[in-house]
Amino acid sequence: MDQAPSIRVWVMTAEFYPDIIGGLGTVATQLTQSLKQMNVEPTIIGLREGTGIVTSRYKNMQMIQFPPAAPFFQQRRYSFRPTKLAAVLYARKHGQLPNVIHIHSLQFANIAMYYKQKYGIPIVYTCHSIVDRVASRKKMQKSLMQAADRVVVPSKWQQREVIRLLPSVSGKTIVIPHGVVPSLRISRAPRHSLLYAGRVIPAKGVDRLIRAVALLKRRKIDVTLHIAGKGNPLYERKIKLLARTLGIASRIRWLGFIQPHRMTQVYPRFGAVVMPSSQESFGMVAMEAMAPGVPLVTTRAGGLKEIVNAGNANIIPSVTARAIANAIASMLKHPKLTHQRVRNARATASRYTWHRAAAHYKAVYQQLI
Image 1 (cartoon, rainbow, N blue to C red):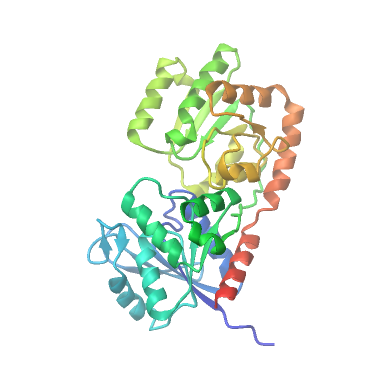
Image 2 (image 1 turned 60 degrees about the horizontal axis):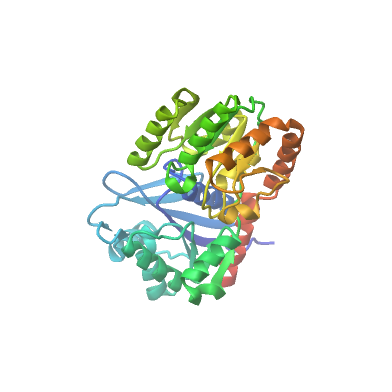
């Protein structure tokens, strides 16, 4: 029997392997790779630093990358010019249009809406986070949500946030959880070797985590905290000064930015991952720590509540230094309970696969076309 024609999807994303900064790029890359294995024909419409347009291939998928500069990009609007990109895409794709446009990044919002208006091509928008600072980007995100045929979010918490922001999209906003790459390595590292991974910003609670390390020192509990990530330079300087002021600079290791695709090898080197975050749309770091059996000490903020609980993690009940310190101390004090939580956490992670996520997305594509 002949195989059904493949679904042509243009994946519009500012981040894609190997140029990944955070969770968005990880999701765009892993999800697109899995879709390729399901009779979906993705073309990655991406962003690249430098000048000129580059057409290449990644794992048998075509990539067309544009620089965020004139004449293609409008810096003031933080957006690619639709007609400029459309002319290039027409030539590079020999006039072939997609069945669906799947957009991850707001920089491509105008080009996605251009194709929807001119050719009736449906839009699937994966909303990774709510824009809450720059007014022009907030407006663009709302316009994209209104134009999209489906707005996909990774958690019920994020779904509620989207609907609260824009009630008119409630009927087309759906939840498809992210996946996680299975780990072949299992953590055997000493439990006192702690890792924080993620953006170094106030909402992630890094300053309170450093204060928690100081509290543990006073209690004669010896831990070393490794911080993998970058953030606002002013905030980084502030918390490095805080560590020195508290007399724990020697107990903090600053690892800097580590490429997300390398983190699967990094997690098992540590005895526990600490997530003192006050806001998470899903919790990729938590899931990536669970997969190789690294004990997790975390809040249940935002979407984390849907994947972590007292059965698979040590829960931080509030984002305070004392609460963080108590949760870390409990993880160290009760090794048998920690081991049971690790087993449960690995079982949890095994239920979140990129294949399963891709199957849900493919079903959405089929509904729309």
